[in-house]
Image 1 (spheres, one colour):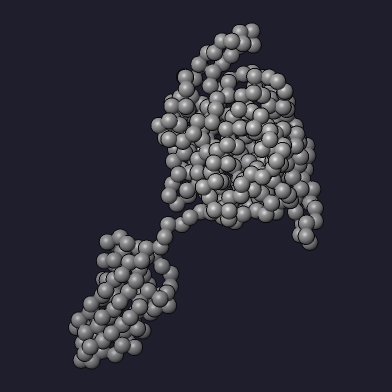
Image 2 (cartoon, rainbow, N blue to C red):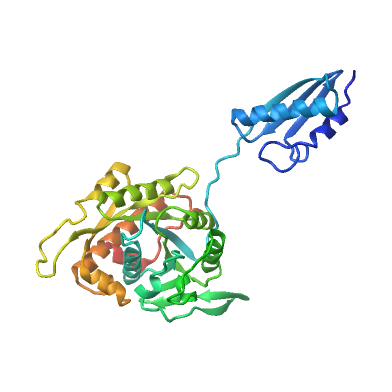
Amino acid sequence: MKIDKKEVLRALETISVPGEGKNMIESGAVTNVMTFGDEVVVDITIGNPSLQAKKKTEIEILKTVHDKVYQKAKVKVNIKVEAPEKPQIKGKAIPGIKNIIAVASGKGGVGKSTVTSNLAVTLAKMGFNVGLLDADIYGPSAPIMFDVENEKPLAINVNGKSKMKPIESYGVKILSIGFFTQPNQAVIWRGPMASKALNQMIFDAAWGELDFLLLDLPPGTGDIHLSIMQALPITGAVVVSTPQNVALADAKKGVAMFQQESINVPVLGIVENMAYFTPEELPNNKYYIFGKEGAKNLSNDLKVPFLGEIPLVQSIREAGDVGRPAALQDNTPLEGAFKELTKNIVQEVVNRNKSLPPTEAIKITTMAGCAAVKK
């Protein structure tokens, strides 16, 4: 019995490699077919390196050739594995934006948005051009913290395209889903809808020239985080935690998320919020309500920079509630704490950018900002 090669090819067009949609011939998985009398040799390349995938591919080919070509054919299948490279989530850069910093936390309630808003105004006071994207779709807080709850972004024409103009407050350009919903309206969206809304705020906005775009991420590690990291080339991430063990366990997961090989976003460091409590009447006393130096110890364990500590002070909460971030008040201990934190973050960004090629990240060049950082 002499087997016709064309019959073998037609038979292989009826099956596909496990996990792929196109048939083996159309997808290009079959690289060669040879026939010698009643012998058939099939060379095939698959992307799944698992033993199960290789075995299933071989069995499918054997069964198909026996059923559709010749029942007693002697079939040999040579399988080559070419596993695709692990995806590097880099995203596309936004023209005019030099550094994109993601501010994250493993859990809610640790003051991530408070740290982000005060970091933003401190950068602006230093002379940097700053934007803030409130990416917490389900719990937006930037409109309240910047006293712009009743503002609505306007549409402007930029190079023939309609773009959203961010709301400006205290020198910071802000966009938040909170601008497009009612205060008592819950955002009940599935992941794809939330991701689409974020993409619009990122890419359909007239951010202009920014030294820093801060991303206030939702708590945890989930859909929104992955969508952001797929959409944008993040310069680095800042993880906020309190000193207590429960928060530290989640902060550790947050750091691990950014450090995953397939994500590979540099962690600029960890911030310890609510580090200690100082009563107004006893300004020199420190009470470690949530534990002492937990986030600092975690940063040492994980070998990531410790960026600074922010005390638990009533005026921080009050300032956020009235829409005037505490760091705006000059010559106060809080302003000093946020300024020290901000300087450390800027320094880590500079260090990070020195080790990257120009296409990956652009160095800070704002002279006013650099001068302020040196003070």
